[in-house]
Length: 467
Image (cartoon, rainbow, N blue to C red; front, side, top):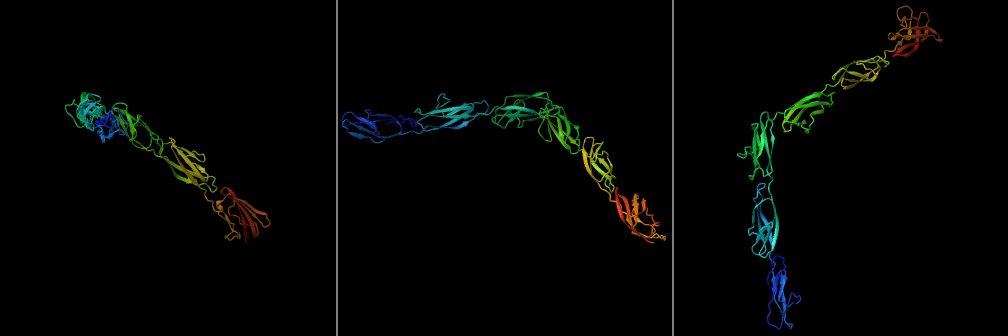
């Protein structure tokens, strides 16, 4: 017998040799159809039994014949070395093979076969590795060799007056980097170089961890004008508590365009700051080179319009007139205008009625203050009170009919009526001077009309004349 050549192949073979018996032989395999040939080919791995018979039907059976499957051919890329620098060809691949039969041969990307399992001098990219054994059994795997990006160099200028500093910025390759500004003669750990002489060129070279180098990069060293700024207040806030101040930032030096940030906010290109409340502010600027500057300013708070009530006079007891208010105005920006709820436009109106009076004071910027003033009605004077009797006998005691508090009501009218309803005395502006001398002893009735708080008030009663 011969074994299969490759794992799971079907190319095994069994050859049977028979002697004895009579005549020609016939052969069968594993109970299959008989054949005249003693060769069974195209067999897969497994156990087989052959039966040989002659023309007389005599039979003989062989023992089990085993066709063995070889171990599968397994290909593993165990050692992959990536290229060290962009564009380099120092990558390598080491492969390990198990299974199959005998010695192996290797090829890369369909190239010439080799006996070594090491491929070196490779650039970055994807590779197909092919391995075969002495039976022509094969296996294939793909491997990718990586490579770093090219080292690229950029720079930022520092901002000085008369001198310049440069920060070299590297990308790609394999960090960390070393920096050279003399074409690679000397290297530094930091990419920041200060106080370089102006009007010269420097040649920058950057190397990385693998000692890969960037292309030389020439940088002109130039002088940068110092960036300066000033805040100009265009409009103060119009009123206390308002947020309508406007500030313009004037900029010179540096290199346009300029960018502005108010109190740490987003950078904008507009140099006009509006809608500002009272307070302290800092504007941070940057020019096209990233050079910074600051401008500080303060928006002062306006004094609020304030109304001070210096004095007030209440209305008379009728509540219809006589009230007065005296105001003092502070703060804001004069001149002021006045708008009273009763329509008055005076600062200190007079002849006000009792009630709540509201004044709105506006300054020249239309900033307003409002205040209510309560005008009360004065209480009425004491009401006249008449005595019920008097004795006009000339003794100097109680000779006149006296009405108390009458001096408070000089504008009065008095009528005296006898018991029969006849008017016996009519007096205007009575002054407590009636002695009843023209009347007899007895009881009389009086009607006294006075003005109380601008309204007529009638007081009546009786009075007795005693003799």
